[in-house]
Image 1 (cartoon, rainbow, N blue to C red):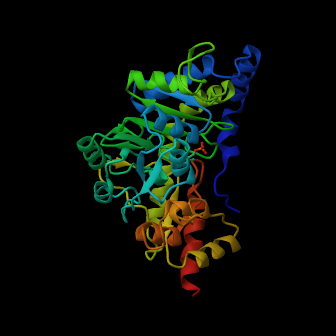
Image 2 (spheres, rainbow, N blue to C red; image 1 turned 135 degrees about the horizontal axis):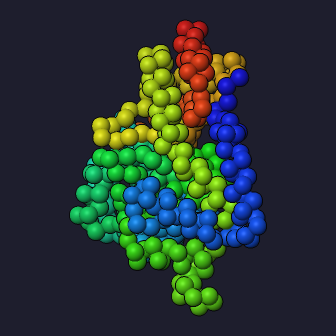
Image 3 (cartoon, helix red, strand yellow; image 1 turned 60 degrees about the vertical axis):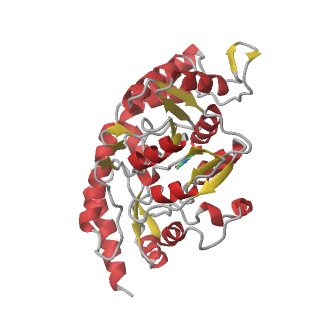
Length: 366
Ligand SMILES: *Cc1c(COP(=O)(O)O)cnc(C)c1O
C-alpha cells in the first residue's frame, strides 16, 4: 500500500519539538497572533527574501486580503487561469471583482503570457498568476506586461513554498505573494493557516490591519477589516517545520527525478522550465487513458489524485462567469489527462519504483 502522502511520518521525528512548542504556547495563552506568529512571520519573510510576511488564517484569506490591499473592488477585473484550485477565483469574487480567465501554457501548465496580454482591458486592475504544482509561472514575462499596463501582480504561491525563478523566491516576484499552510502543502500547519508576503511597507501595514478588523489602535477601525488572524499554535508549528522546508523540497525533487527516469515513455511529465526550481507539491503525469491508469494503481493499493479534474470555468458554481466548453482548450485537456502520483519528502526509491512498475504494466494490459 502506498498512500498519496504520509504526513504522520513527516511529523514523527519532530514530535517532541512540536509538542514542547505547543505546550509553551498553551502556557503563554497567546492563542491568536502573539510572539510565535511574529517569530514565524520574520523567519518566513527572510526565507522568501522579502521585508514582510503577514500571517493569516488560510491561503484563501491571504488571496482575499492581498486583493483588497491592492485596491481591487467592484467594477475591477482580475486576470487569472482556469487550471487552479477554486480558491484563486473565489478570492477574486470575495473581493467584489470579476475574474477574467486566460488559458495556461501547454508545457509549464501556468499562465500563458501572450493570453494575458490579449485579455487586458480598461477595467483590468490586477493579475493573479498561479504557481501550479510547485513551479512558478513565467514571471519575467508576466511582470513585464503588468508593468506596461500599471497592474498589480499577486502571486498564488500556495503550492510553491521554496520554488525559485531566476534564483528568487516564489512570492517575492510580484507586488504580493500569497501562501497557504494547509496541512498537505509543502510547508503545512497542523490546522489552517496562510500568509501574504511583500516588500512594500504600506501594503504590509494595510494587510496587518485588514486581518484584524481594520484596526491599528484597538477599537479604532480605520478600514473595513475581518478576523483573518493566524493562530498562535500554527505559528509555533510553522517555525519548527520551516527549518526543514529546503531539505523536504530537495527530497521531493529527488522523488520527481526518479519518476522522470522510471516512468514509461508514453506518459507526459511535468516540464521544469530553465532558470526555475520546481518544488513538486504535485507530480502529475498526463495520459488520455488516465482513468485506466488510476484503476490499475488502485488495484495495486497505490493512491493517486487529480489536480484538477474540472477547470474553473466549467464548474457549476462559476457558470455565471459566462464561459463555455472550448474557451480554454489547454486547461480543458489537462483536466482530462492529469494524474497526480504519490509524492512526499519521505517517499522511498522502492515506493517510487513500485508506482513506475504499476504504470508500465498498466500500459501493456490494453
Ligand atoms: C491550497 C490552495 C489555495 C487555498 O489555500 P487554503 O489555505 O486552503 O485556503 C489557494 N490556491 C491554491 C493554488 C491552492 O493550492
